[in-house]
Image (tube, rainbow over all chains, first blue to last red; front, top):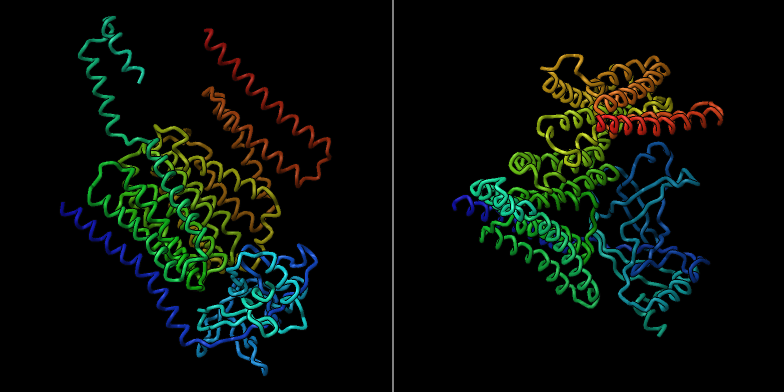
Length: 194
Length: 430
């Protein structure tokens, strides 16, 4: 009887830990984003003749965004070939858009403006380190696929329009904000197309 | 139970006494009561998995329409309900093992689902390996608290995924080494269960899961001296082989003995890999020069596994005469000699490994023939056939010679089986 009580007590402690971890994740995220900085990442999706002109940009309920700042110049190809993930530190350019400051292996100190990204050496140009950001998939709640396809093809891939994604960033924690295409938020584009 | 049905007939025919009939009936009754219902256990676990998946699909259908707080509530309910179910199982102290297994398994998946749902709802960025590690740490105590074997299997499998994912792209340097801590945590419970309830289907599945997980993850320790992983794997398979040949598995069928299967198959496959000259080319790298390799984790693993394999070999064969030793017993020792020899004379080592494989095949043919065991004969033939296939890849033999070799091995298969069946028939006639 005594041992069963002990087991139940231990189980309750484990259960509390199981509840505490997700709670802590939420509170950390909220706290960290309050301190974070907003960055505007210029997108670079191009017209693709495949699949109705949207290529692989639309995947289920996500738009796969390509960014202008998605690569970094490297000199030591052999070194970077062994690296799978790295820390990308951002700053802003003269127009206020996000710009890569550095790509490092060790956790950056003294700045909250970094994200951990998957990296790989470009197979065509080995001086170019390709970066894959965790925020490159933009979630779309709207289920009207035809309309979204049309926005991707005609607006997002229009190189004359300036498109960017707002990201609130603080030490790898981020929240995706609006996707702005030609000065108009994505949600409004859906309303417009109607 | 057909025997129970026939008992009255046997008593009437005066073959057994009424007392013996009662003893037999009570023996089967006791046996049935003590062994948990295997079918119920399997379908119970499957049911738990299906119900969980079904609920997730139903919720996923309306997920987008929910507010953030509603989604968070759903995520936490998903965790709290299995927790309450586990408390119920613990409080009622149900005798049926199946309930604690189902409850623990549900909670195991609920913890993983809860963390990933919270990450999705709040767009929390993180590494897959860190997520798996958190999940495993939060669920490993359940193996002990809920006495759950099904959970332990799921835990071991997901720990393996963690090890592989951490070695591919870990959240921090050397994160993959944490796999070994996670792996060791449920092992005392596994040992205890294997002694207490050796015929339990979930315990038997552990005998397959553990060698599988170790085979899959051992290479994650390798960073620089990858060549040293070949002996490390051979020693690991030797350990499996010795465990499989140990007293615990002696009276058990092969289906219960994953260690023996992994040990034997792993040794043969590793030797086949090393029978290619191309597998040795890295050995010229400076990292393998004396004393550079002493500092590598691969060397530490090699040393550790070699010592463990030798202890097991000694324990099993100390009362045996030399002539009763099998060739498989010493394969890992031969390999060590050939590997060291390969540093200076690679070609010679490759030739000797080919000969070792051929010898292993021939010894098995001899053993099979001696014990009239078709399985062992075919296994020996298979080893020789695989060796022939491997050599046909890298040798400069003409197609005709390769063809003749294959035909000969094929004829060998037929002939060995035919001869053995004839021998058995003759034996039965006598």
